[in-house]
Length: 300
Length: 215
Image (cartoon, rainbow over all chains, first blue to last red; front, side, top):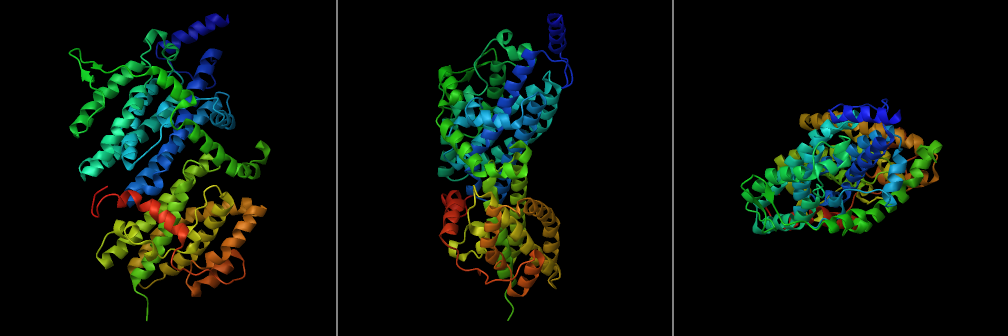
């Protein structure tokens, strides 16, 4: 009985149907949704840390306001996304506990340190560009509440890209030292960006596509990113650190195979800044733990 | 002899700028996600107010707002001691400062709205519209934390600093507003080492390129 029900559910979502919180959901679907959406929420929250160091260092009032607003958006996304997870049965406090204990994951790009103001431009422009490609594909997610949240997220992320591009443009048209800040950042971020959309797992083997949680394969997303952004990067006179990067006659981008083992290591907490970031979050949470006890005594 | 208008504008702008800078340090690490978003909004508002005030001062001084915000030497800033301290991790201190600053600022803005200088009165009215929400936020927090010993201690420490935000003639109004006796205020003076550390950080990117570079 339950199998027939699952088959019917699967047929519905695979045909593009969307389900709501109150609908019957197969247990496997619910588990996969929670894991996927929770990781997205975690990533929004951990994504604050690489950039927040530069909030204090923004070089003009306009950049200060833009960067603060951008990072605030990311926290807002986390709040919205955790609410979706909460409706699926996992409370926010538990998501935060699992995040800081290292039990749950967050996206690879947030395991890396930021080194200069060049990173601020490159993250907002290129990391957010890579992210919006994935997030736009989630607008068609079979779980309707998540798809609805993505509308707001995508709308805000598109502003971040403009802010990032504008920050980069000011530097590449500035002094040679400013140009070099961007070039160095692009070179350093290229590997994490190539890792961003994940291994080129075939569509029919991807459980996320099976349940229509995602509607786009990893390699398809990466190709879209390369197609949209490599020409823009080169147009600014910047160089990319992959001698094999080129668009072939079939219109597909070829590139040096990224080190996928490194990606696995990074997202399992072995990235250059993974432990430092988690430690910082544990510490900052411990500092203000008493506030929850005062404000939400019923939760303590 | 009355003080030049730019002195007053810079004092106000420096207070708003540095408080905004300090509040923005909570981005990403406030006790609740909702507070993260709230404090970030407040920080952006304060910096927006600072920008408007610097722009007015810059017109009088023949310069621009960014130059006033970033290119002065640390000893040239005139922000009140209340706004200078870094309080990341110290939520009780942050809320005590927030509450006291908003109360002092309310008194100051009320007086400015009555200024015979139409530009000053106009900018004060504009700022007041946003500060109303900051006050509601601060008062909500004060109400919830007022019985917490660590909040009371943080409040006591900052009361003389809060008085120092205002000109002497406005101090009784602040005391009345928060229901406290006036004490010896901590006056504005040359900013100390904690401010200098913040200045070093807030200007480091800007100082890394020659003056006039675009960012």
